[in-house]
Image (cartoon, rainbow, N blue to C red):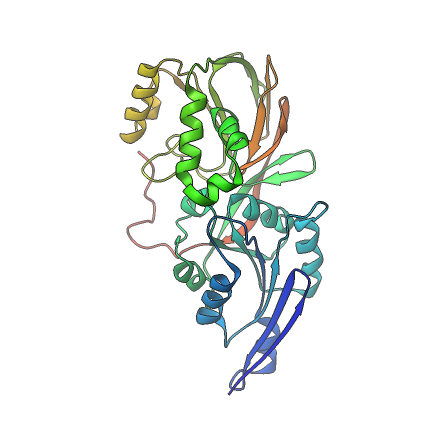
Length: 335
């Protein structure tokens, strides 16, 4: 017999789901806290709840917090406060911005991060091979989930887990409005990027990675903890991984239409290292970036300010639930 009690309060719905056949000890331990961004992509709360209940309903106690986007809302503080209740897993249901906020709260703890990728780009989920459908993503939370440790990047007192970009991508994110993202999805980003590329000229940067200093002209500088560029097979470069203890810096100096055509071709062929307009650096400690003229900075899909910026590398920062490896995915390097 299934016992269900639902308690609603502002911004929160709590569902206590238990099965008589389970022991009290197991019920007390199996507790999941979900942070849902109802504005992310085309998701809605009913779909998220239904998918969670279908996969986990009789085995767990679930609390779902819906973000409001209100001024002063602090998702990181909300998650950190919830950790006092010892959740088994904290789940981020949203886009890369929501995932970044939840991940930040879990850095340095033993609590695992689960991901339901219901945003627009879902870059972090793609990087970790997490299913993009709700049912598949929820299924990863069942039983004893497989986890991996991922690195992070620290800016001031904030942490980020995927990519920090300056140039075309930060202009694209800054200038794509929320209504267009919800209506057209990733196509909205692509259109904005295309319009910003017209007439865009590389700018002079100063980059210092673990003490090594460069002064390149670049149209894009990306500090990458993951290599996915939009969707497979597009990647920023070979061997960029979120779990290798280092952060990669990708410097793109493309200027003409021919330069960008060559870059696209090399990206499709996974031969970015052969493109004369692409350069790579790696850092295990710190990265500093400035531009001759201030440029917006995007971190995990959100605009966080303008250059200059100082980044600290944080290895093995948090545990994330991912698909268990299969023979075809074990030890398969980027080419």
